[in-house]
Length: 196
Length: 141
Image (cartoon, rainbow over all chains, first blue to last red):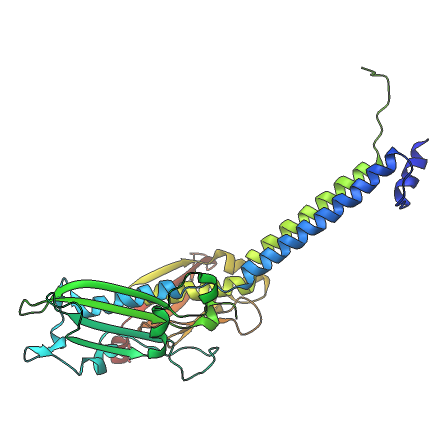
């Protein structure tokens, strides 16, 4: 069999080979079927990976908790604005956002434009009684708070829930009273951080 | 060994190898394009800038390496200086024709963003963010 004849045979697709060379051709077809399957798998994985938005809510809630903590106390001493005549200033919640330079406006792209995408809660406890807070205040969408206490056995099923960070630290008032301060920060924003 | 026999290049083997190489090239190109696509990069930069501003303090100057973004913006005919824009507390990154990607930061500071240039006036691929207190800007105005 000359070379020209061989090449002609390769170009003519024969699915029912009668000799060893035909078997090789069938193997090549199988090889390309396998390659196509691999390519399909890779394309699907890449689409799933890059199609899902980056979820930065965990980092965002940690930063928010840190910022709140920095705003409450400096070098372990609670800011004097938290106290009036030796007791807690109940009006601190009204000025806290401005004092800490917080702006919780968000861009378009979230379901309900009026729905706040942030929530934080600050609680003060005395070391003698860490079960009941002596003073607390919060700001934002309190609906998100419930998401923090859902037991997440399988994270994949709960990706749409808000991301939470809880931070605890001790600080002193100017009079020297010790307080345990608990901060809970929550970020909603699931539309821009989770595949819908 | 029979050294006298002439070697032959089988066309089917050559075609098989070429098709395999073609397949691998397409696969690699697809992966590279997906990873450095405008949509992915816009989102990455917007969120990265928002997180940096959230954790920044006034009087800070932050430099961000956006060399990949510069390359893509130039390819899409977008001036690199217009890639990042900050309006209030919302950052927008635009690397292609379209709306771009927006993300909000909660730190209520005055942020200005501009592309860094070298002595020759060419963009270096860095973006510079300057963070200032809002009150100070109002007082200067």
